[in-house]
Amino acid sequence: MLLVLLWPLIAVTVKRLHDLNVSGWWLLAALATPVISSVTSVSGWIITLLAVAVLSVLPGASGDNRFGRDPLAQGGI
Image (cartoon, rainbow, N blue to C red; front, side):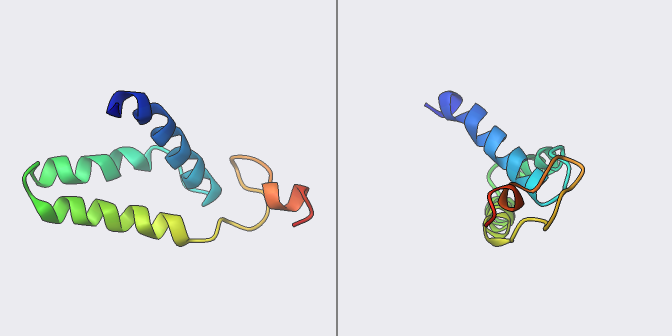
């Protein structure tokens, strides 16, 4: 089941990073954090979960950015 959900999860995360005007390659750094610290280490997973939580609540960059137009500006929202 994880393999089926992995592609959409990566795609949504990269789109969110682009919404924040950040390269999607930063996802690799976020995924490498728990692996490098140790698979059994709880602190690496907590750091990753905190990063995901922060990305979820931050507002996107206002206006157009290098990844495309602002979707909220197009809809008049």
